[in-house]
View (cartoon, helix red, strand yellow):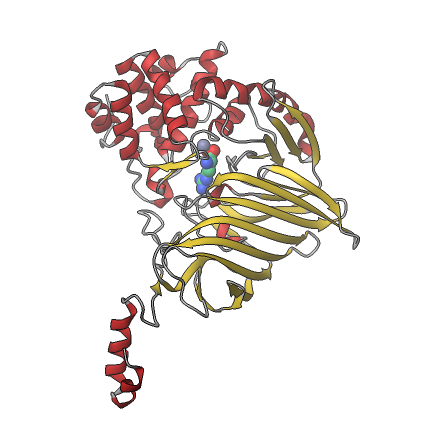
Length: 470
Ligand code: ARG
Ligand code: ZN
């Protein structure tokens, strides 16, 4: 293209020519904007198109006294198309500056979308580094089902949790489970506080200005909703599971006595999971017990689930640890696939009971069908209200049918194929999709292939069918 020729053209014609050139290789303008959402069926604006993140390095400075967070996020990503601009998801907080490849980049905010316009377009396949400096008082996000996530303050501290869309309240990112990345989360807090996150504590350093820096390293891929940051007065204990996985527990002092029983079983539960579902997928494990009432749920944050107050029974510890295989290592492709998390984690509780002299899966299955859900403390009569693979809206992705009817889908498979093939399927699924993402369609195809059974009826009636299955 002869650029000199352009001067004689009228402005609209110039714009048209530039648009034409944009698609061509060798032109000066190569990129187009990345999509502002991944069109998830339940959260269409979650995540962003045009790139995939490899790594997040989050440097977060938090002061419990005034609730202020000052953060630097260094995101290493790969362009999947030529990009003239791309989006990150961020809710609240003030963006102070953004650079791409070390060069200042223009940026603007609209709702939960931060649009970044690099000085030069990014080429398809290019690995690029984005640095966002930001800060403010992060807030809680009220979820579609009216539960809270995001950033929640606790007496003398705070916790960041993300399922499903809360992580954008405390760091900018590609916040959809389909884009997994590795993380280094460094938390700097006033001296005397503990700061806990995912993975391995690489270092704990007194900075000399009255603060302590905790560097957490999470080398396995993680969906951003599984990231956590916890600050406060916690009691830390460390141990090893019998097979040698390092355990790091942080317990709110007021909950220490009540947590002791359930946490004492944690090492054994992790190793039991390895026996049932294949090797534990991460390098570290543990638990974080928040002050009672911080959240209305426990969450399977990667390597180190959070509990809101002491876990009432070991069942809940089993549930959150089973998620490490199902949800954390094998993550859903979209929020529609939640039953692959919750159905499996619930079924793991039933299996744990079965293996430890409790009420087993067959009994529970029969009792549920007979209208008696008292065999499972948390279950409710609405376990059959909708098909687990098709929740009727975003407020239902953590609804009872996703958990209980989801678990019953697995039990129906077991009834069809027998124990040997069923347990081979559970393990095969976790091993073959380790550290990846999977959809419901991939599971149903895999189950039929692995077991050699036609399971269409189970899918039609139990997974997708309306009304009470029978
Ligand atoms: N995934 C969590 C658990 O099973 C529950 C999260 C509930 N979140 C919600 N928004 N209702 O263990
Ligand atoms: Zn769960």
